Amino acid sequence: MIHTTIRSFAAAAALFPVLGLDAHDPQPQVQALRASAPAQQTPAADPFVLAAGPLKLTDLVARAANYLGCNILIDPREAQQIADAAITLQREVKTDRAGCEEFLAAALSEAGMVVGYVDGTQQTMAATMRNGAYADRMLVRAVPRTPAEVLARPGLAMPATVIVDLQHCGNREAFEALRPFATTGRSPREGIVVQDLGESDRLMLVGLQRDLAFALGLLAKVDTPEAASAKKRAAEQRELEDRLRRLEQQLREKQPGKDGGK
Image 1: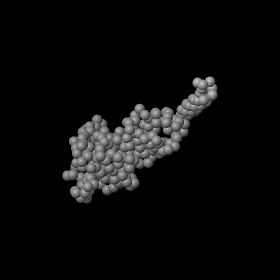
Image 2: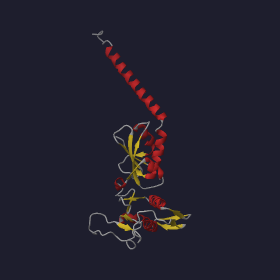
Image 3: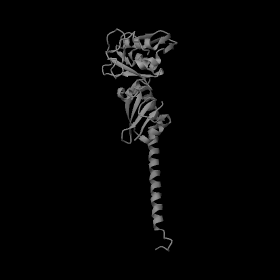
Image 4: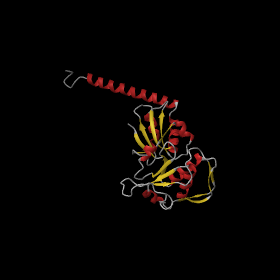
């Protein structure tokens, strides 16, 4: 079974409310980062705008949460790791809801965090350090996508999963194409998890959607009619080699012994 991994906020307790969790609760406390605007389940009519210049990640999160109409949850202990993180915009950002999601996810990704929706109504997001204690939650939060949906938003750095049905090559050839980027692991801490589904021509990929788009593009160059021909030739070569080995074994068995053939 193929199972491999591929390479490719500040703690604002005074600014944002902490969810009603007991301080002695063994489960980690979570901060809810959200502005005062009501939740929106449809794209905002006005564009999402960020002025050129320096911008703290906490401000970006608050403004994105306000625009998207959602809460953004983050463990305070992980928030401390990027308490002073900021970015500098050389140009103004002016985009729509999808662009806001992509910009937020990309900015947090550069800071070592992964963000994604945790509910079907898109009213709650959660962010975690990619190499932190809760990175495995990415697997649970990965949203099922079709290959077309992944390729439609190749810049979205949010967790997703996609099933790939190979048309010409097999899993072995697909895996070999991805091998240069692979490291062993069960969590997409460094890239994409590639899982063999038990069929010779079907794979499941889990990771950030932008990484999945890259993987799909790479597989498209491998999964070609030429690859099918090469696969057939390789199979024929293996069959020929097996026949030769069996023939050699039969000849050795028929050779006379040292005692004159008795």
